[in-house]
Image (cartoon, rainbow, N blue to C red; front, side, top):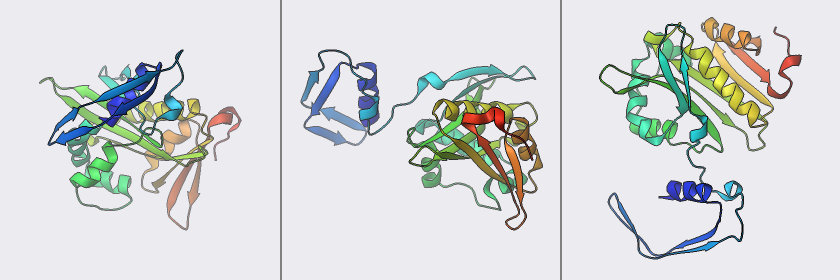
Length: 235
């Protein structure tokens, strides 16, 4: 309900105030018994007033991979949880090891809810999906990043379904994230991966990241200056 109200005040910038009282919640049914609304004299920018950012539909993008597969790139939604669990479970043991920096058990409902029910103002997760022959949506990959309160640095992590690697999905997802945070005026984008994941490091380097090796922690650091990308040099 709160998310829908957030979307309402974005779609209708004339709204100054909404008073909803009382609200009755019974199971999945929510009833608004009394609603009062006050309007601005002229449309205003309501985005800065939101406590919960609405789904950024304008970030949806359709692309075609080098093997001809058509995919949708879009921000993750809470209702993606079941498909996202299937995606996470589809990763091979090796890919899970590289993604989570060690062996780990399958995700619980609570853990998956944290990954799919995000605040778009504080973090972003893009997923790549395609339609199966049966008409169902299949999640092929995901890239996500969280940002500090000062919008200085975002730290990312990425995974691609094991049976869909090598067709350009990782590059497409990471380019999408770079563009998003660059437009968001974020200063830096960083990520860490294991020494064993040289493919991830090579991809990052090809996209303009500075790649360095932390021998003590046995990690590869990927760093990009988003606002001065053309001044970067790769190690």
